Length: 144
Image 1 (cartoon, rainbow, N blue to C red):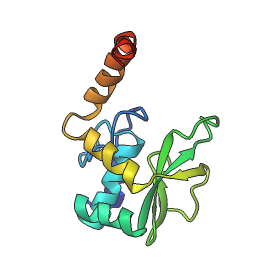
Image 2 (image 1 turned 90 degrees about the vertical axis):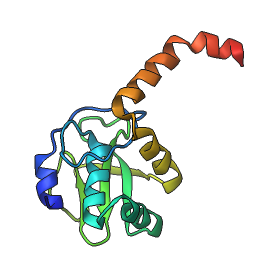
Image 3 (image 1 turned 180 degrees about the vertical axis):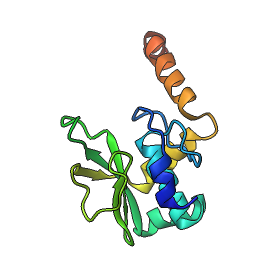
């Protein structure tokens, strides 16, 4: 499957900022960060090459503010030096992130833990940990 075919077949599923980034080559139940990370992996020819592209500045994942959520930068878009911008809502390459507004580039030291968090437990573990932390916050504070 080509990267363009992949982006056209992604079945979007709402995620969370805390749920990690997964490689989802079949495009099933991918949120914006999963879709953009997978797209980068397909373009570059694998996960290691995708990380190298992020480290070298050839590509970047960006937190952007979407037209539907103007208050917070929760959406993720991919910028690639050779192609431009793409994301899970506007699935064609373009010169600007519009209609989204760039907020901050996701640095490699923040992307790598999110990728590690997404493997192998994925979105279920992310959501489960958030629930676990919220439900046990009082005990955690007492322990500290």
